[in-house]
Length: 127
Image: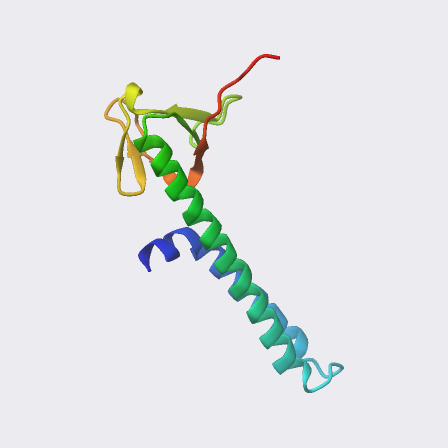
C-alpha cells in the first residue's frame, strides 16, 4: 500500500480536486437535483479506474525494468535534477549501479533513481 501512495499521491490529490469541482458545479441552483449523485458517482468511478490503470501499468513497467537490470542489461532513467539537453542516465551493473528495493543506487553518483522513472535501453542503431 505504501508503494501505491508513493506512486499515485499526486493523481489522488488531482482527483480530489476534480471531485470538489464536480461537487460545487452539481450543487448549483440551475442544475437538476440528481446531478450531484450521478456526477459524483460517474466522476469517482472514472478517476478510480484511471488511477488503477496507471498504477498497474507503472508497477508492470517497474518489474520489467528490474528484470532487465538483474539480467545484466542496460536501462535508461530520467534525470530531472539536471536540466540539460541530455536529461537521461544509463544504468547497468557494469557501471557500478545496484538495485535496492525500487531504487537504483551508485556510490559515485549524487542521486538515486526510482524504477518508475526508467525504461529498457535499446541503444542507438545506425541505419
